[in-house]
Image 1 (cartoon, rainbow, N blue to C red):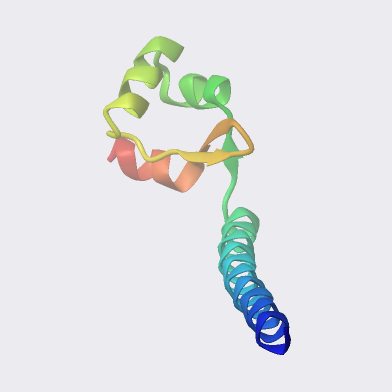
Image 2: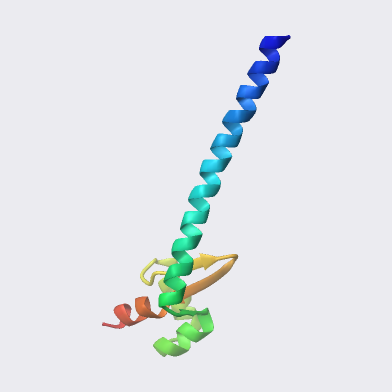
Length: 89
């Protein structure tokens, strides 16, 4: 009985350790995104199409072919203005 309890305790500790590592990595990535957000401006699809003077369909094609770097955030597709300026050059 003592072995089973110890095994379950070690299993829970391992799961918590993996979960802690997962959360740490996700928070680190979110922090990096927030830092980039403060330094640069994100544009929506509509704003990006207007900024590049192209149709939203053309923007969709550029996104699908991964020609233009995009960031997906909670189901929204956003474009960094600095990436768009680099794309235009």
